[in-house]
Length: 208
Image 1 (spheres, one colour):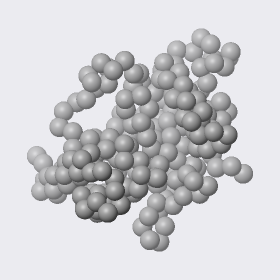
Image 2 (spheres, helix red, strand yellow):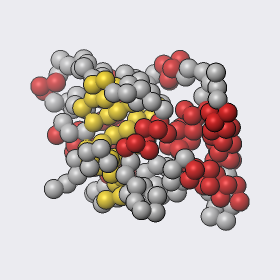
Image 3 (tube, rainbow, N blue to C red):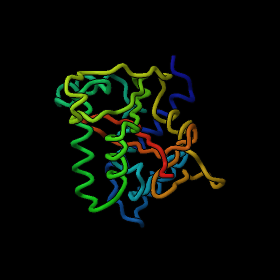
């Protein structure tokens, strides 16, 4: 049975999603201000410059407001949603390479790509209750690897997961170090965004 609190959160998420998709992202836009207020209530940063981008937030709100299983839609897109599979790792590497090329000589995508090749990039999906260390599918030692065992984590919604992992400052805003969010559970760099058709949480060690 859905509680009054759950129902209120659902309505708020749906309202924010509707306005997020219809607003023109103008700093003076009234709807954008309303959206920012609602997202702030979820502890989320609505800034387009944020790693938690409007696109990512839109996906998060989709998750919060979803009333049906969307796995069939993901399957229809052809994107691998199994984070333990080599096909997912191949898709991840290609996406990071494309993002790194768009960044230029340096940036977060470069850092994540380097962590992927070093075996220190972790992908988590709390909606499926799994976390796994990414591997480079082009590494000769991984040529025959079709999948690896993931680590079981608590199943939870994205809102609760991000609030539990992303570090906040005294002002309540998410903390950034060298342009990346900080995972307060292990002091690593963190990113939340879309890989293929779904959303995932990526973390990697901070530079010494």
